[in-house]
Length: 561
Ligand code: C2E
Ligand code: MG
Ligand code: MG
Image 1 (cartoon, rainbow, N blue to C red):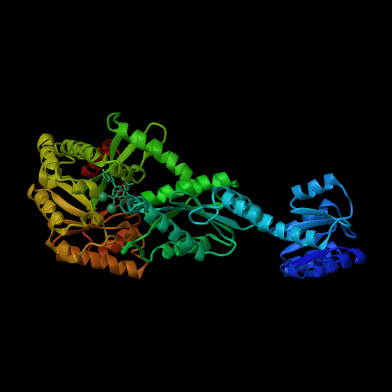
Image 2: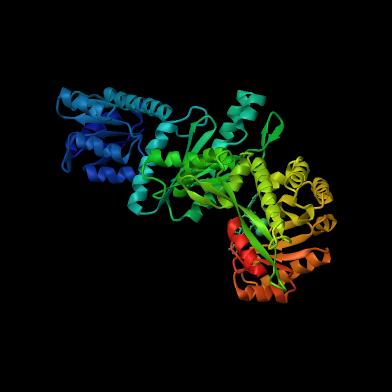
């Protein structure tokens, strides 16, 4: 037993030394300090099994001695060794953390060693209870209570250092399946494995906690920048990746991770946890096994999203959609050959919304098919009106289809009935398919396109060059036009790399007997550059903005004069 004796009186110290020698079985090794500062210094460099403290020292008195020793050595058993028979002080000492209180002059060798031994046992039991109260029984990780304590401390430290604190909220993606199919024992084993993998991949200053079920949290105080946070999040994902063997079967663990940051996302533990939780849900929605950073925008975006979702359900019935039409011109003559119908939503409170704000949402909600039918019908009705006028009798109408609509097996029927009911000639309707929408099942893509083509409508590939369509597949499809993506057109006149791509796409289009169309043409330089490359048709703000039908009618009439 290595015991630190803190005692300024030489006579009392000698007495204690004699007592420990008296009982050869006690095997106490005494280290003597005469001042509190001396004791504290030793405590921070050496380890002791217990401390024996006098409460009247030259540099500290009373309970302060107990407190200061505890602050330096939290887990150290303490026995007070006082000259005063003061019951109140004895009680206070024990309350403030000492394990026993001995009176000088009333203590013999046996009592001393026994008090020291009991103090050590008592402290051990105390620590164990404390551990149980603050840790998760299954994994041994800090529990929710300790997690909040540590988060408080971490925030205070980070605030002082003026750097970042990151909170990672992890939810296992496939825990329920394993738990349900292999039983709780396997589930427990899995959670223990996750706990140990997470702990071994983090710094000492980080805290991994189990918040409940299959939810874990990691506190990372004093981070320098967001890049470092992301690096750790990736490391955590890697740590979970190696297969885990349960009952001779290998399982793959993945987790969805939500990340919130102090000071960006909140200043309190509760706010940060709420943000990290919301970000985790976002990660799950984006396909699991991903991490997602909560940004101030997310809270805004998600409430925004919610109200858009609700509004979108009613928009069709409330007649809130409308189409704008953008001219497409012949690159050689500048004549308007056709228009592209572009969808807009007149939102009751947000105003006119572009498709990027709601088309992806409509796809997710399964609303794109009825909306698409409305677009097709409205566009063909308008086109037939122009068809019957002198100025617009030659016009083609282009309608955009999303990947979802393209996958719908009733598409052919819908197009056929719409053409019949509106009377618009099939040969003048062009359906624009996003390049992304052509990927996937090649056979099905080919047969859908052939079905559409057999109706006599034209087909074009939209935003060509940014997807990954296979040229082999493209060659077999009945494509009438390739629309070069705006990103290549933007600096076609100045960036030799983009010039080469544009030239290449035009070559591919012509090679397959299709028309090359450039979109997003904004300047005369771009138009000239494209004409120089033998591009057939052009579309963009330079030739006309997307605009309501009446405005376009006026433009057509002007052009006819
Ligand atoms: P897109 O089919 O590639 O349409 C061209 C987009 O570029 C339009 O954006 C148009 O307003 C914009 N644009 C045209 N000329 C210029 C220009 O010179 N400079 C620039 N910077 N932009 C130009 P919009 O109307 O916001 O539509 C975005 C996308 O939404 C469309 O891209 C299309 O993929 C989709 N979309 C539009 N209408 C519909 C629809 O009825 N159904 C479906 N499924 N998707 C639609
Ligand atoms: Mg388009
Ligand atoms: Mg496009």
